[in-house]
Amino acid sequence: MNSEARTEATIHIDTSLIPDPVRDRLSVAAMEMVLGIIRKPGGRELLEKKKAEIAKRSRPCR
Image: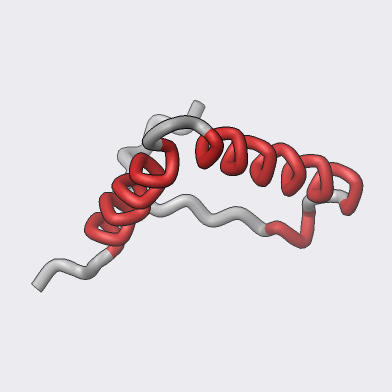
């Protein structure tokens, strides 16, 4: 494990290194998860709340 202190909270993933069949399975799994959440009572609201939280964290500090 790298003992250097991390200075960034950003993760960079080179998606070109993910084989097509793996990428396709990940895409299907993600879509099924989202659709499963939306189908539950209050699910759409939960997703909207999470999206807003992520957007708020992603905004640069001024």
